Length: 97
View: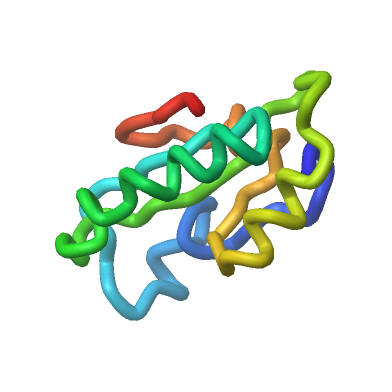
């Protein structure tokens, strides 16, 4: 998860070109473990009802306990961004897990 291909949508230089609905705010959920990813998923209902908020996940680089986090997030169909892109992208809110 630390490398990965950079997303063009919903973040990036050309993101507005490809979005069908403009997000007013972008939230980054930073998962370190499968447990923290699960807890971050518990807060999603707070944002889900507002279409102006886009939530993305990333897996924090350097965690000794990150085994399976990427697989877990893919399994729940969470939109993920590589760590290398997350640290270079401005977000309105970052929520650590």
